[in-house]
Length: 435
Ligand code: SAH
Ligand code: SF4
Ligand code: F3S
Image 1: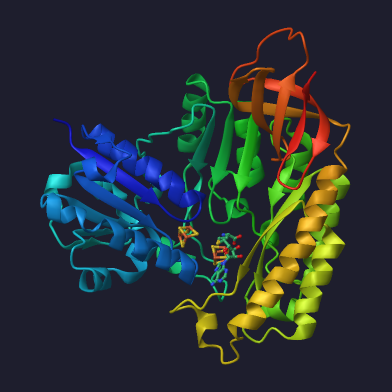
Image 2 (image 1 turned 135 degrees about the vertical axis):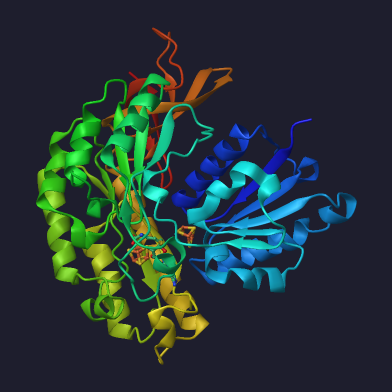
């Protein structure tokens, strides 16, 4: 009987993709996946420590499933991801029923489960990570994540990532291009280049150079990338988004705060004015580009004026979408040593104010697409009485639900591109009719 693994994933796209790699590694070792933890021989918790809440979510999940060891004493529990890296052996102390602690740079140890020692910690630096080809078990057959860099060197003062993911290192471009060519042969239509700071990519090519190479691969229709750091958003990258037909008109560009004073304390290496200048450059070169962002509310020492600056920035820039978070104290980060932490109430009030304002803006921006034609990549469909209902995304990354005009000329399938006339808009999605 094949051994079975069950993976629960927390956190960002990087972790989602690492879970696909871990699944690939274990499948190559003859194991198979189960979606039912009760059937599993190993439970893997791929964890996130970006904010306190993410950490709590993991510990409660772990607590909820630990009883399975009683009915199945051979069951193994592995903690992987960012909490594993940050806490290391402390996890074994706090929750002694955990068997393995494996950091993000050491997932290769899963290739032979029997050889890993019980109660072991694999959290060493792995300089070979960028040169390693991991087997990847992708669930989606149309859209694929492709790692282009590992780690982060930016040390934003609030952030754990440089401690959990190690030093920034770029994958050789031949490996990336080979992977994308293989994905194209396998029928994938969209790739998303992945890294904490993709626009600082550096091999024998820079990031615009890599985009240019990927743009030439037949079969791939769309190229996306996350996340970009404002300090590395070059004129060349703006030109690539403008000129390369497969590179989609969307950029996720975390602002974090609209106050240059707070940005300095965050060690973000740009001022609000510099950020705004880049936004104007993007909109000038790529009309209709969609820009989304991340904001942290209530950073230590954030005054009413600093918060106001963020509110004004959100209104001035008019983002297409935003993820906003309450500042969360992260042990070991530089900002955790600051003295003027704000109370929870004021952080929440500021967060909700920001979210309310952005919700209205998102709705208005979507409304402005009413009557336009948008190309979507079809990701799923269901058969309904009125005909097929499709779901896909625009090049600007907005979800569209649509039907075909009657009578349909041809039935579309998953992976097709279709032009849609937008007939309805809401905050989270658009609706329309395929032309
Ligand atoms: N590398 C990406 C972001 C990674 S983390 C970048 O720099 O853009 C995703 C988001 O989590 C960050 O953009 C930030 O807004 C938020 N974040 C990170 N640390 C946080 C903390 N301590 N408290 C609240 N939000 C945080
Ligand atoms: Fe964290 Fe800053 Fe690196 Fe992003 S760039 S992962 S926010 S340290
Ligand atoms: Fe979380 Fe690690 Fe990603 S801390 S956000 S899983 S890089």
